[in-house]
Length: 277
Ligand SMILES: [Zn+2]
Image (cartoon, rainbow, N blue to C red):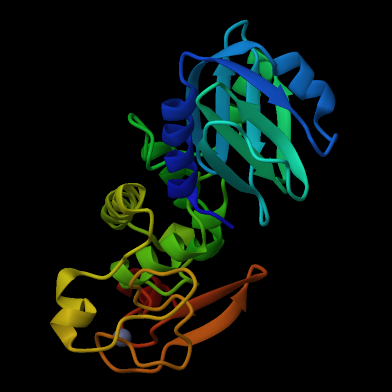
């Protein structure tokens, strides 16, 4: 599933393509025919990404809400749109540009109160200016649930996916099973700042790189990672391979229905939780 940086890049891209323009909308596949008819001819005022949710705000107060889910994809191009190929849920176009959306988990029109309700159920997005890291910590510090699951919970932190969470926990030196209530205020400040840093860099480059400069392939004289996700990481999808820092084999386990990866040596339980046992 795309992580938040992808959605923030899409919001910027769509603003560039259609911002301030009157947009024609259709649903070649038919599943969004009614919504597209309502939208068609409106002017796109602004776009917005909130976590993994994309919003287009049109004049007249209507918002288009898209969540890509596992399979959703946008494609765009210049000039006349091509004949629709496959299941195009939504097509937008102007004289200059076109945009196709296929396979989203959600593609719907929202009224202003519905947009407010969506924002209200999302946690703090590290990529949004003014996001308040105290709100997530208020929930994390009271919870016995593992940090891995808490940081993936979009009502706590919005936009984080498996790669950012896995890697931020490695960089913090905490095992993914660390209970939220064992995370110190300072520990949280560092994780939040790290998420802001890693996710902002991913918006700029379009890929997720989480290793410090001294652990890049060139610096270490190791071959670059080969993976369809791209990017250099410490432990994500590296089960059985040696940790870039200590050489221990990276471990993998099923946690909260997702794969978690960690280094048993670099990520040990914080002292505070060991003292409690
Ligand atoms: Zn290690």
